[in-house]
Length: 401
Image (cartoon, rainbow, N blue to C red; front, side, top):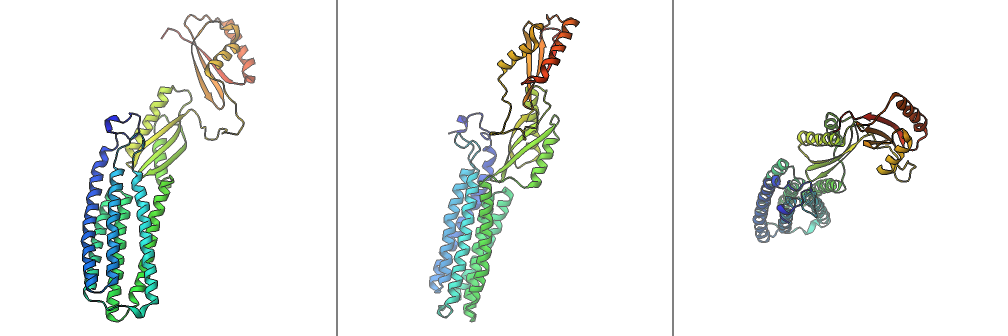
């Protein structure tokens, strides 16, 4: 579906244009990672076989797996940059979150593999093969290349606020640490300390598992719609409460969409303002929050005339108020024959499971002091026990609208 075909009521139908630059930068850094990993894989395989280093060949296979992970990141980066459509009205940014989860799991698997390999080496220290010096230099070169790639990817990921790119950067750091293990192991073997690589591998493997777990947990929290941190929520509350016309804020829900924030807010306005004024206040709240909080991409504002957060919910006893037509008929019954002509208009305010009515009488209504007194007396007698109305206000329209 093209952008021209998108329904106008999609909240993010026009949000994709600003993501194209972000997508291009993410694609560029990932292609750089692919190029570096392909070169390193070829180098590690050749030198590893030539120098009889099984560790270096294994690290080459690990580096090759990074190439496949980078292609996965490319796909997620492209999908995440797509604009909203009919099937994804909130956009595709969660592709990045899912990619972050996968990369976190890959990091944990990498660390677990290093730990298992280290334990096996400790159990078979006497079978370490003779290793050529070239393997050390290849491992050191891989370490430096991976560390440089990590710093480059991390800088871009933090600038773009992309959890996926940041996770992929730390994946590169995990690779650098595994290359450090290879270098330490080969160097230790050449110096006669065969156990050195195994001990270093255990420490590094634990660090990688911890980092991967943190990324996977952060992605999982976003996928289950965990709210943003309390400080950010409080800043958003302050912005909403400072909006003119807002007299209360009784519900605020937040969730993340990749690096952005979505908000649902229930604000309270004066119970007797018009629908259009209440809507305008809600739109003003939305404008102010979007302007003051750059991470917020949309705010759904529900306008309430009262704090309905603690009103009875399903299963609890509550007054079931009838629809407007029945209420107006009941209103005429309360007023009786004292007002026999048509109402000019009636405003109904549903407040606290009761109704307040504003009745506007037409200009030709004739209300002398005697009739007014009878109406007042009738309302005094009928309102206290009425099941629906709490207050009724009569107003006389001086001139037709």
